[in-house]
Image (cartoon, rainbow, N blue to C red; front, side, top):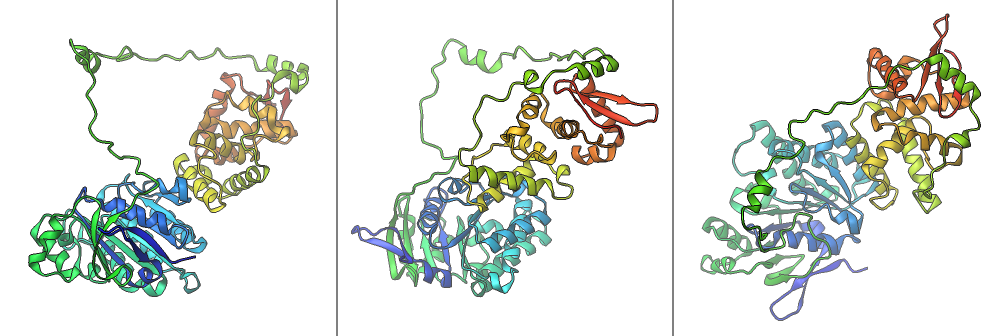
Length: 485
C-alpha cells in the first residue's frame, strides 16, 4: 500500500501528493481565512489517509463528525463527559488504535480548551508500548495555542498551550504527528507554528498574515500578494512531504460533508398578504394551557392478589412482539448484548445520565466494529434498563412476554419495574428498598416508596405486606408474585 495520497492537482493537472510517512515525521501547518477551503483540505487529507494511519481530530465546530458514517471514526462528544472520563476515553483510543473525532461544539471556549488539553495530554502520556503513529488534526488551532492572552484565564491558556506545544515539539517520538489549521497565523503561538516543516497556505487578506505566510514559504515580500489572489480551494504547498519548491494546488473533491454545510442562496418563501405575520406572530393553541393528568383511583390490593391467583397462562395475557429481532446478524446481536451486560455490571452505572451512557455504548460498539446507528438513544435507554434487570437481549424467547409488557412503562421507571418482574417470574425474594434505589439511580429510600406507590396506582404492580412486615410484589398482567422478603 502506497504511503502517498493525492491531495489535489497543480495548474497543469498533474497530481500533487502528500507523503504520509514523511508527514508523520515533519508535521503540517494549514492556514487560510474563513471561506478559503481550509476545512475542505483537512477533510480530503483525512479521507485519503483514513486507511493508512490512525487519526485523532480535535474538532471545535463539530464539522468532522460525519467521518464516522463512512470511515468508522469514534465520535467523542466532549460536552457529555467529565475530565476523568475524557482521560479514560483518550487512553482507550490510544490503546486500541481507534480513529476518533473529539467534538467540542457543545462547550464554551474555555471548556473546549480544557477538554482538548486533557485529551491531548493523555495521548502524549501513553505508555511507551502504545506509541503508535497517529495523525493528530487540530482545527482552529489559534484557539488552543493563542499567541496572546485573550478572554480565558491564564491557567486555562497555559494548560492548552502546553498540550499543543507537547504535540508539535515533543510528540514525534511518541508517534504523534500534528496537523494544525488556523485562520490567523498572527494569532497562533509562534513556537507551535515553528515546529511544522510542511505548509499549505490558502487565501489570506491581512498584511501581517500574508507576511508570515510568505516568510514560511520562502517567498519574497513582494510575492506575498499572490496569497491574497488565491481562489477558494487553492493553496500554496511546500515541505518535504509535499514539494521542495512552492507548488500551487487545487484541492480535489471529498466524499463526506459537514452536517452544517450552507448550500447557498435559495428563494425566500412566497407568503404575501400578511401570511408571514400570521405564521410568526400567531399564538399557538397550547399557549397558557395547563395539562391535568387524571390519577387512577386507589385499587384494592387483596382483590388483585386474588386475580393473580386465578390468572391464566402468560401467553394468553400478553401478546409476544410481532416485530422480528432488532438485529439480523446473531453475532452482532450477541456482541451488543454483551456490551450492555458489561455496562450494567459497572458500579454506579445507573447514576450516570442517559446521554453519557449512550456515548459510552457508541464508543464500545465502534471498537467492536459495529456500524453506527445499530440502536438509537431511545432504544438504548430501554435496552440498558433491561440489561440492569438481567435481560440484555430483548429478543430472547424467555423474555418476550415481559418485554412486551414493559412497552407501556415509562423509560425512567423501566429498570426497577423489570427487576420486580424478573424476581416475580423466577419466584425470587422481593428486592429491598436499597437494591431498588441502586437500580433506579437514587440514594433516597423515600423516593423508592413513592415509586412503588406510583407503579401500583398505574396497575402495573400490587404490593402486599404481611403482618411480619415482609413485602411481596405481584405483576397482575403476568400472574406472578415474588417471595416475601
